[in-house]
Image 1 (tube, one colour):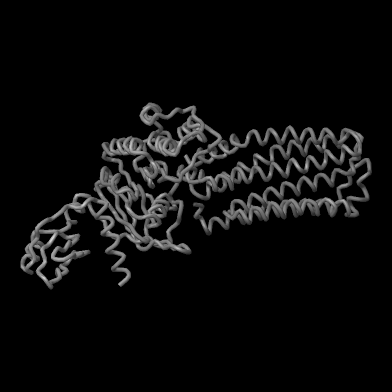
Image 2 (image 1 turned 120 degrees about the horizontal axis):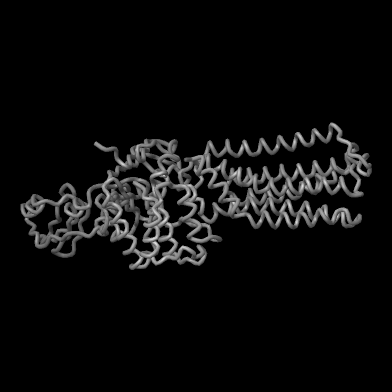
Length: 222
Length: 298
């Protein structure tokens, strides 16, 4: 029965954020569609895509985790036949699905647009690492919201995450392995790119595992 | 002998500014346990420990035969929990919540849910954000009752409700225990509600259980005696006397252990008992809490 409750809770969260996901998809598709128009539009479209994914990330985490706790709906959810750990895993699963689905659609669309239009394919490794960074940011923010009730920590996570994106973009564009091939017709996948992707994956996994482990030691959610 | 619905013993939980100490509770099937205490006494914490939402630092917690919080998922299949501060998803409707709960509990009774909708004058299509406080409490109670749980844990469900809404809810709770396999733990600081529906009563104050008994025993044991006191004398404090107040030649003695022998003892001490009054549960509760606090402060 707990498996069924788990599925219900995941579906419940997805239902509650369905319009958020749809809105992000519409806005994201519009942003990606701008990218091949001209150089200015590439910049505007790219920045807009990043903004859409950041806003989706923040809205999802704040609505489904922080707000639910603040509004005391969590008391109702925890009255259902589910353990605290199952609740946390269901919450993380729902959030990941809600973010990863539009993220994946928009990522594949971005890659397809770069590949099928006159935009240089050399910029693909940069975009892949940036999209990976946004996914890792989502996991870190989700982990903070799951691990702590403190709105101060959550605000710190959001602020630090947003600022870090502004550092990550020039950092990656200045890396010789990216900069040297950015205008090339073909993408060049250097070891450095794979190292960045591996670090992003590790950060996401460690953050979520640490949040679950932390809550297991202090299981009082209400 | 059937297993009790609730068996809590030696439970302690420490917070930064509050401590629950050595709490014990027992609820048998077919009974309503009134759990009475002032604000901040530890009622909600105790109930959340019973629900597995808060983990006790020490002690044993068994609910419906399940060890809590380890087996909370299994135990909560048969528990209906309603708390005064419980909220529902404001962007949805009551019908959406009914569908969610019905999809989780195989025992959901749609006919009973419909009946409760009518009795509580609720509308399934009503958005949650449009519900008043009383309607919201009734909605959460409907969601708990219509799954036909064996155990209802109700944390101050009648707080802030108008008399009619309280009457409707209490009436519904009395119906629940007509099935003698079921039981209710009902916390409140409104002693009127507790007196109306409970069989057993437990008083809690400052994180400690200060008294527990059957309701009728409380009402029988506690009395207020008016005495004529000879000039210069003070009424002796016999066992069970929790308070004495004197004004001139009249003294009022409050006792938790009334018996005919107590009257005789005062008569033997030269004090005429000219009136013996029964106390309401509220008076018993206040006298109990105050005498317990005085003992603590000594």
